[in-house]
Amino acid sequence: MNPIAVITGASRGIGKEIATLLASKGCDLVLCCQKSIDQLSSLAETLQTTYAVSVRFYQGNVADPHFAETLFADLPRVDYLINNAGISQIKLLTDTSYEEWKELMGVNVDGVFLCSKAAAKLMLKEHRGHILNISSMWGQSGASMEVAYSSSKGAVDAFTKALAKELAPSGIQVNALSLGFIDTEMNKHLSDEEREAFFDEIPSGRPGDPKEAAAMAWQILTSPPYLTGQVIRMDGGLL
Image (cartoon, rainbow, N blue to C red; front, side, top):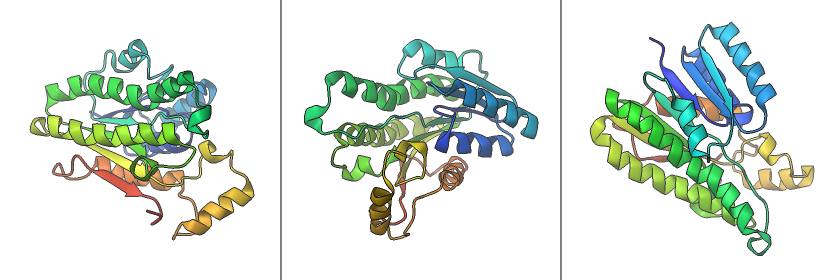
């Protein structure tokens, strides 16, 4: 039987590259996105044709409990859950509305809670599985004008460590991949000058590639069972 992987936020960027890599490794996939359903549909068709794997895909908000449950409906098991869905916000705290705060926390934190809870129920039956949360270096260091985003990723890091302790006796791994500047659409708002200034601060001198993030995610997912409760940072040496 092929391993089954559920990947949130899979229509583009890091999620798309993780989905592609896992399909190439023979995983059947359950993918979701919130807005880019045409891109996700095209990706699903390509992966099914290229790698002869099963791909189910859905559109919805992972912060919605009903939608989160839908992702796991009728699955016999879950081998891998990759909580990748996330939104960012560049804004002063004093300019951030409560509605904006709730929306970001809903996707970035509530979605991780809801999907992990649903996946854990299936994994506990098998006494195995791996939950991987895609986090950010800003969850560890904080970023000016990104208080909400930094807070959400700090919550994901703490969630990872706590859940790992809870599930380790059942043979289930929980880790986080804490990323630095990855060259995705989430960072396209930056001007060329802003990008170059940021790259000058990175010892590696460049942004990370989404394929590199996917490769690291696969290494963590296939790591020895003793690796759990870790927030593994990949940021080009910045922090």
